[in-house]
Image (cartoon, rainbow, N blue to C red; front, top):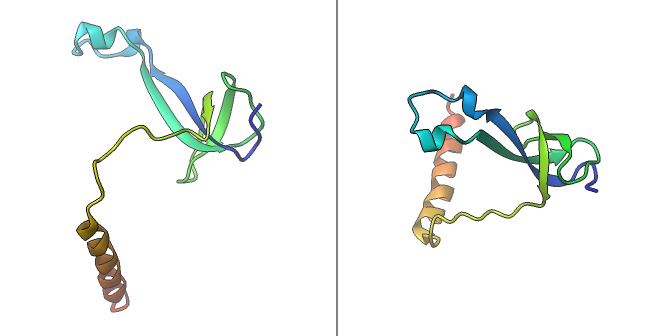
Length: 101
């Protein structure tokens, strides 16, 4: 059982195979279109149970509870130090421009 306020991942079927457009390849059309979303659990729930979450953007989304504290399995490669430096410089410039409005 996961507790209210836990960071979790849910999934929900957005389109069944019958609802998907005929213009898709048959192999793609044969599968449901599934959404996965992370957020804070709104009430206690067990894995596999329907639940509701609040995302970081404040949206309330319903779905089936997949996992607590989900890991991110993607990668954009190694960190590029110059891009980290540019981020700080850009934020500083944007703050300075916003003060002239």
